[in-house]
Length: 67
Image (cartoon, rainbow, N blue to C red; front, side, top):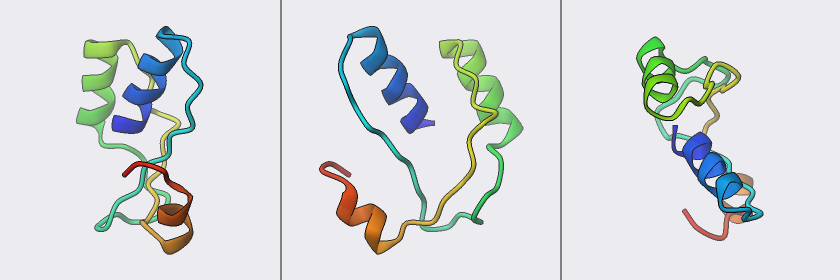
């Protein structure tokens, strides 16, 4: 959710940002929960349906400037 909210805020502010999300207790490739999809749609008009979970791995952590 944070990745999508970050991207939307950056877009609204005309800020170039590359955001990725990952988790330590996620199953790789899973869809966002129905509640998460609904919450982002209702609160921020964001479509979360393209999201797929990703595990936190060394290369992704090393890629990030801010975690």
